[in-house]
Image (cartoon, rainbow, N blue to C red; front, side):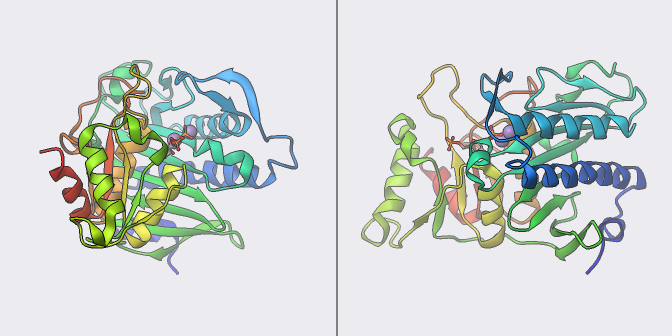
Length: 322
Ligand code: AHG
Ligand code: MN
Ligand code: MN
């Protein structure tokens, strides 16, 4: 099995970006270890603090954020970082070439039940002419990402990553401490009979999504003429990993549950990196109005509607909005 650096060189990834990726992965190995030891080290449960999103932080959210932030900033490769758990961007090396946005632990509600969680990251080039403390540097569309990925702390610790030359799977080999390539150029099946949505929000969805999901549930007795299965892991990393492995449609649609927050998932460190991975695997990553990676961000914590996965099923869903 190929090691990480030769696999990246095969895709002509520049050496300084390979170094940054290896730094990020060093942080994820440490997070993976802390996650496995959390029960033993008093790291279960919540802190008394809220993050900028208005969510109570879990102790592991804070630990993962500090580890990732410190290791990546100390490397000197980045001009700034932004994180779900930081109010605004944090300045790094003024001549650092890259910007990293990350969700240190995705699926926080799964921490205390020993279920699937992961770390999501997205890398952009840093504009040379801007001050490292200026968060406006991060206002670049998903199309400008040079790398995106996630690490899943599951039964195996897996890295799923793209640098724009396909989406590849790696597994952390604890015998030598590195990630090994296990699947090059993953492809999302074009058709699917599986969907992922938080059904408890049904009454708050817009009409097109209500109608689409009703037709899926009606199965072979409805207009779709086939039965569908449903899965919901409550961690986007887990749901998107399943979609990359065997296809499916994943959505967190706009809803009216909280009128001040019509969308749940964050553009910069959830929707954009996952869109890059899904598109590089032949899937589609959309809102009901257009492509996610075309969106010009207005703030680092902005939220966005997400409909992504198997190409034909995403297209089928979008017909309900026309
Ligand atoms: P986070 O734990 O980083 O805040 O993200 C959780 C997100 C996403 O991973 C998941 O798909 C979704 O929230 C789950 O939402 P519900 O709580 O509605 O199930
Ligand atoms: Mn998340
Ligand atoms: Mn998170």
